[in-house]
Image 1 (tube, rainbow over the protein chains, first blue to last red):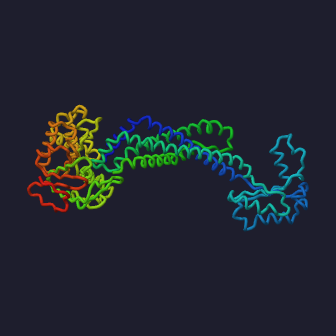
Image 2 (image 1 turned 60 degrees about the horizontal axis):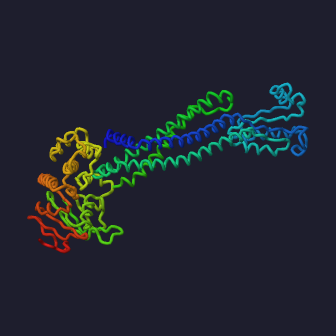
Length: 304
Length: 239
C-alpha cells in the first residue's frame, strides 16, 4: 500500500461524495463546538474556584452584647471563651487545614467599615460595640472549609461562622448548569454526527463497490481497502473540529477577552490559551468518533 | 496444485447441497473445464477456490495453502497468487485500459517502476498495447475480456480461475479469448474455467469435470491423468 495511492483513492472518494462530506464537516462543527463550550465552562468554573477560593476566608464572628440570645445566650464573649477559640485555632487537630489567621477587634472592624464605605453608609450610625470581633482564617485547602466551619460553629462565644466561598456558589452553580446543558447537547449532536458519518461513509463505499470488489479479488489487504474511507471520515471530522475551535476562539476573543473581561476584571475569564488547551481534546474526540463510525460502517462491506 | 478432499457445502435455506463429498485433484499446468447446468455447484467450487466461501466439511488445498484453515488476514495474500476473470469483465469504466491493469498492482502496493514495466508487457501479451489509453466503453466485448485477463495475469499468478469468460461474447470473440487462454496455459499457468459453452469444450479437447447437484458426475481425463477413485464419481457417464 502506497501513500500516493491511498491519497488518490481518498481524493476520488471525497470528490464523488462532496455534499455528504460537507454534511459531516458541518455536523462535526456544531457538535464539537458544544463540546468545546462545555469544556471551556468547566475551565471557567475551575478558574473561578482557583482564584477566589484561595482568597476566600472563613470569618469566625464572636459574640457581642447586641447578638440575639438564641446565638449568644451569655451575651458578649468572655475572655476565657476567646482564649478557648484561639487555642482551637492553634490546635494540632486543625493545623493541617489552616494556613494563617488573624484577629480583628471591634474597633478594627469599625475602622475597616469606615474605610470601605461611603460617607452615607451605616457606619455613621453604628459604633464599634455593635460590630463583631472576628477571627479571619485562610485555609490551606479551600475544600476543607466545611470541617473548619463545623469546628467553630458550636463553640461558646461564637456568634456565627461564615464561609466566603458560599458567595460564589450561585455563579458556580450557574456555570456548572450551563456546562452540563452544553455537554448534553454535545452528546446528542455527537451521536448524530457519528450516525451521519457512518451512513455517509457507507454510501461512499457503496459508490465505489466495483473498485472494492476488484481490490478484494486481486488481494488488497482489508486495511488498505478501508483506509481511504476511514481517512475520508477522519478528515471531515477534523475539518469540523477545526471550525469549532475557530468559532470558540472567535467568541472568547470578541465577547470575553476584548469586552467583558475589561469590565469584570475579577471574573478571571477563559482566554484563547484555554481554548487552545481544550482543542486537542475536542479534536481527538471528533477523530476517534469518526474513525470508529467509518471503520464500523465499512467493516461489513469490506470483509473478505 | 489443487486438491479437494471430501468437500461438502450446503447453503443455509437451500434444499440441495452445493457441494457433496467432492474429491478432486488438479495438477500444475492443467487446463480444466468445469461444466454443469446453472445451480449445479460449479460456481460454488470456483468460489471456494477463491476463498469467497468456506466448505462445511473437507479440506481444500490450493497452491500449498489449506483454504479451510486460512485465517481471514491471510486471504488477501493468498488471492495475490491467483488470477480471476468473470463473465461481466468487471472493469472500471472511469479508468483507461492501462489504468485498469495498473490498478491491480497499485492496490497491493507495487512500486511505480514495477508497474511501468509490467503493465505494458502484459498488455502486449493480450494484444492490446495499442489500446492502452482507451476507456473500456470504447472496446469490444472481446477486448474488454482481454483487459480483464491482462489484469488477472499482471501479478504473474500460477493459477487462473475463469468463470464463464466467454459467456457474454460472440463466437468470434470467444474463439479469440480461448486462443489467448490456451497460450497462457502453454506458458505454464494452470487454468480452471467454468463454462456453459459445449462448443468450446468439445473443440479444446481438455480435461472436463462435470458437476451436477454438487457432485462430480464426470471427469473425462486426458492422457497421463491418474484414475480417480470410482467412489468419488456419483453417476459416471463415459463418453
